[in-house]
Image (tube, rainbow, N blue to C red):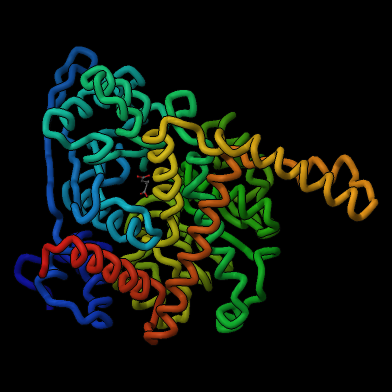
Length: 479
Ligand code: GLU
């Protein structure tokens, strides 16, 4: 029965998106014996800032609706992206902020969760106008102390990227020039503005590492009738933004078959596989993925989710898999690259069908993990690897000389080149990301097995809640 204040929506019987995440949270609490009050504190959003500001767009003055939500202050700064979309609303941003808290806990990134949003369609307004809005939004955040290297650190999300992060930094710098750590007030910046190598592709690469790890597990794979490994696996990716695009490229390079790609305007399908870089070229030339010469068009983009495949990767917006289409999904694995793409009702239907779902709060944590590396770089004021690269190369060279003299054998110049190389920033970032995603996967899987939890999402929530509880207890707030 629905409660009085709940209204049934087209895709979910829950009154709100936040309600959906609460439902996932509550499922996990059955496996945790913690005082109710503390669980309520973890669930609640600590601070919600909604601001309307006027902007002159063309000849008209428009009122812009925007948000920044800090879900949890158990660790500071708060961290999370800023999205630009016409669908932005308080409930959505609160939910996404909550997901950030759990995400950071799972991958051991020492931040509380946050999220921001501006209700605009960046595709219908000019770059100058987007810049004006971004700068004004940043000043509003500064005014209320909702941004800063130790307070709250935004990053890119749906509809934003390096360009917007640069404007945020520049606005912050112009108001707080005395802050020596100002570069760390935002992540996802271009390299020239203090960004870190490997941030752009981090979420997509993290998605790749997480799914690859599952596909290595013989037991899990045989439970759904698949072979181990990625080679030959049929994959559908919904959303070709930054996350979907990089995920598609990494799976393609690893030998998986990308059978369908879906975008807002429609989807394209080829049973034998799509060459991702060719599709991107076509998209750049024509402005759409449709009419790609080596594929069939699917006008109704939602139908692409229901096609035959092994792995389905929703990489766009929330609630795309819901009670209306869950039963028609044919994938055996769903990797949640987007935040909240599956409603709780759909979750139950898919679980009954035996689909393995790798949850968002783990799978798309690659972005914030590398944001953490960028933040550390900005606070230390030195590029990762700068201090040790040459030292390692010299040590390796000495080691090689000893080996050659001891073994009385020369190592080939090509092998030498590989062995001698010291780590560059991109090497360190990638290996840190890979290690985070692999160990995160196994921690969740081991917990799932040891506590006999039905699915990875509940196990991931149990892991996150336990870590946050531990942090609150050590803080001494609950003696
Ligand atoms: N927007 C991304 C997310 O949802 C990245 C957040 C960040 O790097 O802070 O995880």
